[in-house]
Structures are given as structure tokens and as C-alpha cells.
Image (cartoon, rainbow, N blue to C red; front, top):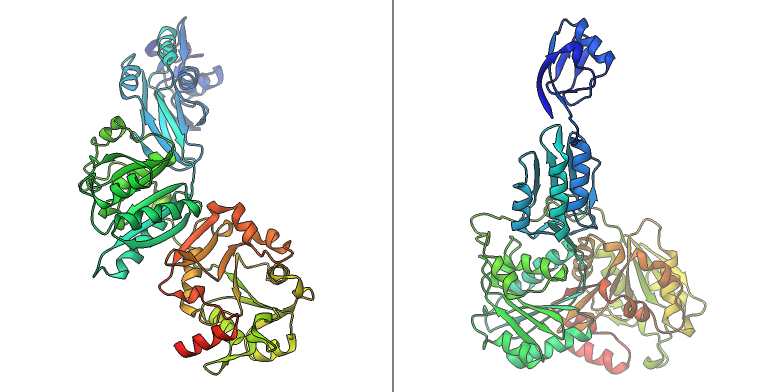
Length: 540
């Protein structure tokens, strides 16, 4: 390529190297000058311009950039159309970027006219984020240089993009005497936020004693609840392979691959597996939302990359996170906030015949002077339900009378005797189109508190994909009621029949479950028989 000043009359067909300001507008640098543009320059009194003129064998900047980017970049990413010698590379989906440091250096050393820059190794990026940029510095490159780069690419792309695959997680926390419940609750909340940002569901959460046998049993229970990865946060940090958490993993039939991480904060992390399922012993710093080595490990797990010795050892470079967060979360993830106006409707099932209660309608029995069904409805309304539909069937007039004065809509299910599923379908079908989810409660559970309803709405609403999630309260490892269904499941709920309810839908969507820990057994206590009522009355 020839480069330098030439008389204006000889500039046609060359590339303008320096922008020119003219009375009738500006000629930007990099344009190929036509006869018309040469005439404009002459009219402005300009006699000389600096240009670049390609010679035989040269490849212009855009063509060179396109060829090099196509050769060096992996499948599964998006390349921009070359402009001014630049091609940008964008992520398609959420994932992590990895590069071959030696080969990337070698490519950048082939010729000073061709440069590639990319984000940091193992950087987490969101869909559409730029992950690399390729720039041809001069207005052309010799064809031999482009061919050399293409030969270098024969060994494969210089970077890789690994999309994250969401999976359902379980959280096991251990406790010791004197441990504040607020610590456990906060840890679950922070962990759930981490997982939700990565598109993952916390399908099981339980607290057990800091004991090897109890942790081993909790691991088995978590698998039974559909977990495909298990997080264990011990009351005491893991400091040895013979400690409680690693020992429990071994007792459960797993293997411990690593205790200790060359990242601070995050040193006291355990990487293990059970029949190929990741089991991560969380460092104490993971109780807080600040970036730490645990986040890096989560990203690798979701990218399907093995946590081998080389991978973990490589974390040492940039692993001093307390001083500089060298691989922060994407800005869009950090800035994500809970929506302010989540509209959750409610369905209260009150159509049953109370067969096990004898001749009376149990939903009308008074507890502390208030009919059972009214207590259940009041808890849902006071907890923040926007639109409450009560499904009646058996003695609908009596149910309506018990709810007199409350802001509810009563819908009758004429087929109530065929089972609960029809009532669920009737209630969901009657909800307003503006609601994004439905909290389905039972009229014979009078001890559900408004605080639980409010917590469920807040927790569920904080999920980025709340319309496609199912939220359960959990106490002592047992799932209870009510259940909050995202709007995505309304068609399936509306088509239910028989007496199975939503259990079949839940079984088909284990990864949609969002586990919410609750502090008492009210979520498990229903009134089915006279003995249940007498027991609850005595307890009160």
C-alpha cells in the first residue's frame, strides 16, 4: 500500500487518509475518493491531500477484517459487518468467554496492522455483550499477512464462548447451637438471588444440624426433590477433607475433588461431585452478595466445564478479589431490581364436602371466633393478593355468607364432587387477565399468616422469570401450601380435571420450582377431622 500526500487531481480512486472540512460539508477519512469528491476539494481551494492507495496483492481493511474474524472466531457468536476495518464479536446468550492466551498473543504479533482484543478469561457476559473486537489499523493489509492469520486459525478459534445452561439447585445449610436464624434466612436469600440472576431455580432448601449423618441424609433428600446441583453452606467453614461437609459427601457416595480455592475471598470452598452432579461446599463469604470465588465456580459449573486442578489453579491470576474485582458481573445483572408492581391474584379452594369431618362443613367452623374459610381469605387479602377468587361448591350460600364484606369474588364449581382439580381450573380461569401469577390456597388451612403471603409475593416477584416459576413454602425440608404459580402455567391449570390438582404439572417442571423457607409449620397444618380441630383448639 502506498501512503502519503498527492496532488488533488491525482487522488481519484484513492482512500482519503485525513478528513477534510469543506464549505459544503465534511469528507470523512477512509472514504474512496470519486471524481465528484475530487472536484469538491478543488472547488474549496485544496491542492493536496493525504491518501492511501492499494497495490497488487493488498486486501482492503474491511475485507481483511471480515476474513480474519471469520477464521479466528468460534461458532455460536455474532460478528458485525466490517466497517472502518473493525469487526465486533457479540455473545449470543449468557455465557463465559475463554481464550487461548498464547495463540492470541501469537496472532497479535503476526503484523502490527492487525489487532484483536477480548474480555478477560472466564468473563461472564450477557446476551448481546461485546466479547472481542478485531481492528485492521491501516487501510489495507498485504494478502500474505491475511493468509498467515488464516493459517494460524487452522488450529481452531483463539477464543471460545460457553453458554450457561440453567439447572435446578438445592441449598443445604447446617446450624450449631446459638446460631441466629437470621443468618440462615439471609444466606438463602442471597443464594437465591445469585441463582436467579443466572437463570437457575432453587428447588430445595433445608437446614440441618452440623452433623455428617444429617448432611448425608439432606443430600439424598435434595436429589429426590429434583436438584441437579447441590450447594452446602456449613455453620463452620470447611478447613480439611475430614471435616463434616466433605465427609458427608463421601458418605453419600460422592467424591471430593478439591478443598481450597486460589481466590480471596473464596479460599474455603469445596468442589465435589455425586454421580456427575456438582456438589459445592460454599465458603463463608458466599453468604454475602459481593463477588467472590464461589461465583466463578458457579459459572464454570453452569458452562459444563470440569473443575479440574488446572482450572482451579488458573483462578489464581486475578484471584485477589478483595483488592480488585477483575471479573465482575455484567452490569445488567448487577442493576437488575425486583419489579415494583407485581400483580398476584389468588384462588382459595373452598368447594369440598368435608366428608372426614362428619356432617358439618368444616370451613364454617369458627377458630377464635372467625369461620375457618374467612381466616384463610383474610390472610391472602392482607398479605397483598390483588384479585381473590373463592371457589365454592358444597353449600355455596353458607360459604358466601361467611365471607360477607370481604373483597372477594365467588365462583361456583358445579363438579366439585369430582375432585380438587376442577376447582383449581375454575378459579384460575376466573382470574383477571392483568395478574402475572396465582397464589392457590386451601380453605381448610386457617393458620396461614398474611406475613407468609407477603413474603411469597415478594420472593416470587423478585425472580426475573417469575411468570414461568412455581413458588413453594418449605418448613423442615417439607413443602407446604399455599403454592404460587406463574402465569405461564395458567393454561395447564385451567385444563385440570379429577383429584390430582397441580401435582402432575409440578412433576413435569421441577426446574421451575422456587423454594421459600418459612419459620413455622403453619404451611403444613390443615383441618381434616374433628381430632385435628380439637388438637388445634387445645394448642391455641
